[in-house]
Amino acid sequence: MGHLREWALPAIVGAAIGAIGLVVVHGQQRNASGTLTSMDYIEIQQLVSRYPYALDTGAEGGYTYADLFTPDGVFIRASGARVEGREALARLVRLNPQAPRRSAPGPSFDPGRRGPMYTSHFITNHVIEPAPGGAVGKEYLVILDLGDPGQTSVVQQGGHYEDVYVKTARGWRFKSRQMIQSRAGT
Amino acid sequence: MGHLREWALPAIVGAAIGAIGLVVVHGQQRNASGTLTSMDYIEIQQLVSRYPYALDTGAEGGYTYADLFTPDGVFIRASGARVEGREALARLVRLNPQAPRRSAPGPSFDPGRRGPMYTSHFITNHVIEPAPGGAVGKEYLVILDLGDPGQTSVVQQGGHYEDVYVKTARGWRFKSRQMIQSRAGT
Amino acid sequence: MGHLREWALPAIVGAAIGAIGLVVVHGQQRNASGTLTSMDYIEIQQLVSRYPYALDTGAEGGYTYADLFTPDGVFIRASGARVEGREALARLVRLNPQAPRRSAPGPSFDPGRRGPMYTSHFITNHVIEPAPGGAVGKEYLVILDLGDPGQTSVVQQGGHYEDVYVKTARGWRFKSRQMIQSRAGT
Image (cartoon, rainbow over all chains, first blue to last red; front, side, top):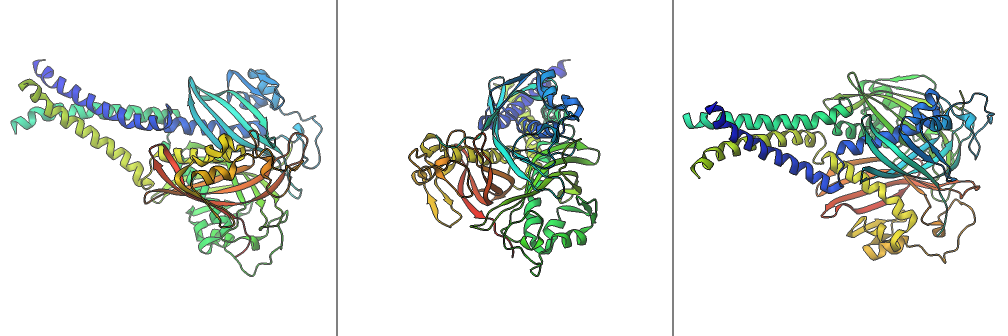
């Protein structure tokens, strides 16, 4: 016991100094970028990267899409309309085989073109910033209507997203995502 | 010697506690995303980012492209045809100055347009997941045929890639990449 | 004092061993990718992601754009013309409400279309490499002229950027960025 105590303090001090060193190293990373770790940035990038697959395929009755959001999450359309909560979000992207479908790509949105091999939402220029309660971000979006083999492809429209992210027990999720269509001029 | 021993144990214990702290910090990052570190994600992103340059320029007789794959790596074309092994992969993208070349961008692929300043394969929405033996990933791809100065530009086609990555002594490499062309509907 | 000294050495040795372990762990990350940490890659990605917003919006009289560069930074246009230093860089992208503006998207650049909701520069395929004094990088760029609601959208042109980055007291900045327009063939 006496012997234990004799080295216990030095050991704890050594560990403490080591821990301070660790905090300093990680703290510098944090200072440079707020309060997000490298892995937070990567997980938020991954969340945003999974979004287009969930949206364009309408997988799992739309729940793959809905579950990228928090249970009270909201998607705000370019029109300003709010789609809020898991059921409404899933319904938004759910496949409807009865939907009328254009035979070729066109300049406006057609829900009948969604499906397991359809790719339409191309997202890039992802900016992430720490924010109270989590993080915020924004990205450029271009919606392409890519042709089936042999068909031509067109640029439908585009703009940018503004996002709020929160870290849940299941990982980073969208608390909100707003689509803002591109507009020229001041 | 006796003095050395006296502080050696505390020092080791101190270091050990510090080391445990380090493992815990890094372990949390791993738990959150399977078995890939931040640097694994970044290196796999970099591998995928280098792919279009190697493909569109046909650099080094196609070997820059081939060497992004493992020696037994395979590229599976949209048609389902398999291009397997270093020589076949290099041949796939090798420049052929004798290839007939369109004077302007067009809606279908033209190998004569490849070259050191040509940019055509735009990749985004990169999802990475740990997998037994390494990692798997997928991305959206749009093939643009960008005009030379003064010419118009067109969207050729697009779809998505499905990848298998392995970490080799030379870094992360493609074990396989499959191109799946976009198709509308269920 | 005598007691302090008695555990001070073990504590320091413990901390030192812990610190060596820390350096080894981080050193392995460095060895795998040159001399950049995970956070360096992420901060350089973030710098590149912020660029299109600053350029397409012309925010803050163009200084948001200019301040992505070092004070002596340079942007080299596709023509080869050099735009050098903070004032010249800000002037390059500053909004001019008097600029004539096309009523619809077109195949060539129109400064009158810039504004707070305009999205035009889509950047992807970001390769980052350590280099003496910092890092270098390259990306693919496509300039889309996206229509306002109801208008069609077109691909204007594209190519790639070649960048030099340096780490300043305010974070990673462009020392230089050169735009190289896509050209077909050898």
